[in-house]
Every structure is written in structure tokens, then in C-alpha cells.
Image (cartoon, rainbow, N blue to C red; front, side, top):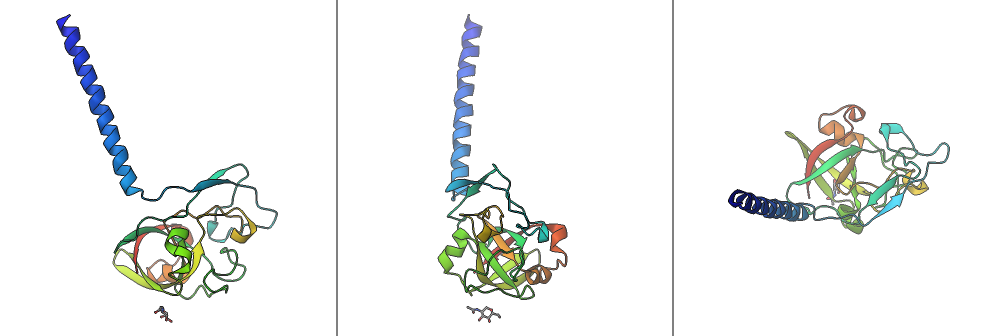
Length: 194
Ligand SMILES: *[C@@H]1O[C@H](CO)[C@@H](O)[C@H](O)[C@H]1NC(C)=O
């Protein structure tokens, strides 16, 4: 009897420790992920001939659920982001013209689109950000939004909504970072600053 009492107490202590541990873990994640999804959209299949697959772009799939965001992670002096490749030219995989000026741009200039939260309603339009990867960096002008709030429609070339931590760069951005064939790499962990 004495033994089973001890076992019982150890068992209860164990449960308390485990639940406390999980609780503080969850609290830690809350702080790290300061940007939560704003909703979901349900994908539809692109009409024939839609969704340009240049740069292996993702195309929406019917019935698939996609998370949307109106926010992005907090900006620091070295904001971590995922660099992806985009065409800003007419007929490219970027969909419509750039959000900042309603124009298309040459992919041989270093330009970027930022996820909705970082695009911040256009407050960074035509500002140059510094993108760093390993020992290289490039200054690139913000010209467009990578829309995290919508997708899977004609205006977004039937691509899913953008994740909330994307710097979507032209070929010139990738080349300046020493990568001549971005399609082979797909995406890069970079940092950026204003
Ligand atoms: C960003 O850089 C481009 C190219 O060097 C320059 O034309 C532009 O004026 C710069 N933008 C700002 C806001 O300084």
C-alpha cells in the first residue's frame, strides 16, 4: 500500500510537470509566432492555360485549404525571410502589374515583392531594402506585394496566397547573391533590413 501511494504521488507529480512543460512551450511559440493566420481560402483548379509554371510556381488545387495572413513577423535589424523567385515582366509568373506603380518591370533590375504584412499597404514602395545571404548582400527596390490575403484567382495567376515571410525577388536579386539558376534552388533563407 505504501508503495502504490508513492507511485501514485510520483505519477501525479509527473503529470503536473508534463502539463507545465507543455504550457510554457506553447507560451514560447506564441511569442515567436507574433503573426497568426487571418483565415483560409479554398482552392479552385486554374482554368486551362492559366497558372504560369515558369519558376515551378505552385498552382491552386480544387478543394485544398490555404492559410491567409494580413500580418508578417516583426521587422528587426535582420529580419529572417524566405527568398523566392518572381518575374515582374508582362506575361511572367507574377500575375498582374506591380502593386506600387501598376507597371511591369525588368527582371534584370534588383526588385522585390514583400508579403502583405511587410508591404504594409505600400509604405515601403520604391524604398530599397538590403537582402543578405551568407557573405553577400544586394540592395533591391520594393515594387510589389506578395499577397498573403488572397490567391487562387486570375489576379494572382491561380497561385496560392503568399506565406507571410516572403521576399519575392527578380532574377537580378538572385544573381547578386551569387545564384545564377534560382529554379534549381527554389527558395533561400535570407535576412533583410530597411
Ligand atoms: C533605390 O535604388 C534605386 C536604384 O539605385 C534608386 O533609383 C532609387 O532612388 C532608390 N530609392 C530610394 C527611395 O532611395
